[in-house]
Amino acid sequence: MDPSVIAAMAKWPNVPDCVGWLSLDRRGQWRLQDKPVSHAGLAEFIGRNYERHDSGAWFMQNGPQRVWVTLEATPWIYRLGDGEALLTHTGQAVAEVRAAWLVDGEALAVATERGLGLVDDRDLPAFLERLRTATGLPPPDDWDGVLLELRWAGLRLPLQRCTLADLPRIGDYRLQAAATSAPA
Image (cartoon, rainbow, N blue to C red):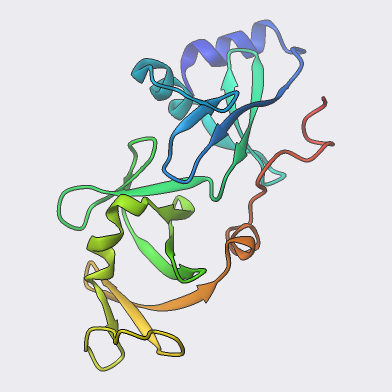
């Protein structure tokens, strides 16, 4: 968190929370009142001050004001860096992919040391090239019922299957702040 944000929190401790203004879409784009944040400096500020609350909801601390984030899917969106490097939508490096899920047959979610997140759909082809059957063969055209694994950074991770609705339970997060966490 930025030092100026921490100082503002100490100076003005009782500023009401902000709900319904900030969201994160499935591609890692911040949105203010459903409009994309296009200013790079503002997007970076939001990313630097983005945190998880004990309730499982996510927020951005904007000076003394907590701005609750509505998540379209997951709190993190992972993007492919150089080689097998992964980055969060906020630009943080990922050290380890721990598990992988095929979501509704059309998206990929991975768990890392930072938490659960969707893989940016623009990077899916690179991940799909790393899917194999347990015997090491590329997946067949019809994946239904076939056990697959993601081969990533020397690991062989079983590809679990789930729905988009399962992800908050799997990743232990909330899509939006609960009424008790963020006064309206």
